[in-house]
Image (cartoon, rainbow, N blue to C red):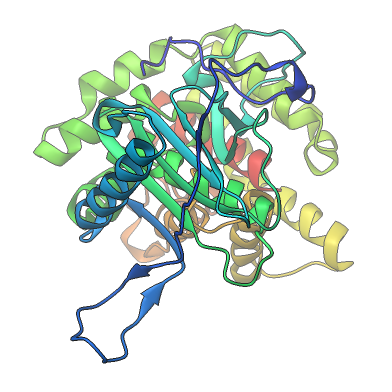
Length: 394
C-alpha cells in the first residue's frame, strides 16, 4: 500500500460495512491445538492453544502449512474445493458443536487506528494519515465467546497468523482484535521496525537528530532511514523533507497541540515558534521549543500526579503515557525508543567547558552553549516534531 492510497478503517458505525461474499459451511472441525515440540507416541509434549506469528517467525511456515492443509481437507470432506495459498484473508470460525464458517477473501475487514488529523464520518483516509494501528476486526462476522478462531492474512509480501483454540471456553474478543492489529502493524511497517532494531542505522539517525516521529511516519521517514542504513549523508533528503513543511502543515500540527490543556497554556510562545519557522528563522524556534518541552511535560505530569517532577521522571512518564494510550509498548508510537531519543539527543548532556554544544540539545541551548552555526532549520524542524510527538503521547 502506498502513502497516497486510501485505506478502509473501522468507523463508529461499522454496521455499514458489508461482507464481500458468503462463508463456506463446514462440519466436523476438530481444532484443539498445535504441537509446539516433537515427541514420540506416549510422551508428553507442549501444545500451543493460542498463537500469533508473522511469516518472519521461525515456525510460521510449518504451522501455516499444517493448518491450511487441514482446513482444505475438511472443506473437501464437506463438498468444497478451496485453495488457501492464493488468498489474502482466511478466517475460520469454529463453533462448540464443531461446525464452522470459512471465509476466504469474503469477510469485511476493519482496522482500528489512531489518526494524525481530525476525521469526520465519510472522510477519505490515506495511509499517511495513520499514527498507529491498534486493532483489526471482522465487524460483520458473528464470533462468539465459545468459538475457536484461525486467521491467516497477507499484507504486502508478508503474512500473519492468529490461532486461538479457546481451551477455557471464553474467547477474549478484544484481546484477539488487539493481537490481530499488532500483526497487521508489524507486517505493514516491518521496514520501520527493522530500522529501529538495527542499532547501527538507529544510532546514525539519532546522531543526526531523527526519529520516526508520528508526523513523518511512512515514506518520509523511510527517505531518511534508507540512506542512513547505507551510511550516506542526509543533507539532500533533509532539504526535501524541510520543503514539505509549509504553513498549512504547520498549522495542522499547531491545532493538534492546542486541544491539549498542557499545550494550550503555552499558546503565545508556541505561536511565536511556528511563525519564526515559517519565516525561516531557526534561532527563536529552538530557543522556545527546547526550553518549553520540559514545562509542557511537567504540566501533563502534574495533571495526573498532582505535583511536579524532575526531567528523568518526566521522560519516563512520557513513555509510560504513550504505552498506556496505545495499549502496548511495541506500537508505532515507539515509546521506549523515543525515551532513548530524548535522553540521547533532546536532553543530551554537554561539556560547558568545551563550549561546543549543539542546538539540538535543550541543555546546550538553555545555557547558551550551542554554537551559532548549529541553529539550523533542520534542527528547528526536529524540535517541532519532538514537541508534536509529545502531543500524541500525553
